[in-house]
Amino acid sequence: MKNKLMVLIAIFVVVSFTYYLYCTALVFKREEIETKRIKSPDGKVEVVLVESDTGATSSYILDIYIVATGKKIAKKDKPIFSAFSIKGDKIYWQKDRFLCIEYETAKISYFSNYEYPLNDGSNYLVEIKLIPMKDSAL
Image (cartoon, rainbow, N blue to C red; front, side, top):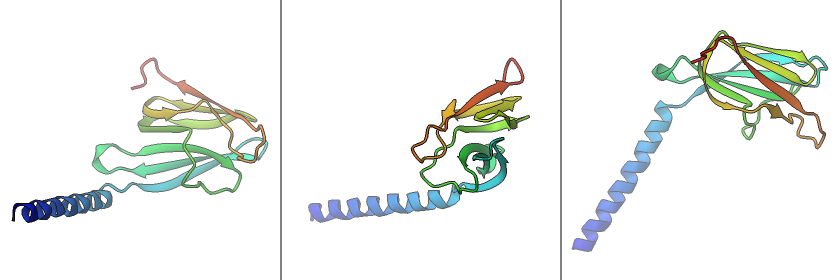
């Protein structure tokens, strides 16, 4: 009898936890919207800006990707930059293969200063530079 009770409790816990994870995923699902594409001067790649609404916790999350021109962002693609509470952002190509990200304030959760966006075995390297516009950017 005691073993049956333990099995029933274990099943209840597993089912409850699974239901909790399912409901949490529905409530906290990020809606991602591609807001802008900026083609590089040589036309080979584009910067793609994606904003995600996270609800009341922050205004939005900004993810920046570099992809081959016209290519959609794949699930496996990682952003080169990810931040929330960003203000005064300006993203531009300074020249071929050199991208600048200016901002007044931001809480940056990820940044990479280089990317090989073509994924074709070529050595097409893009350098990325962060430029805070104030001494304190938080």
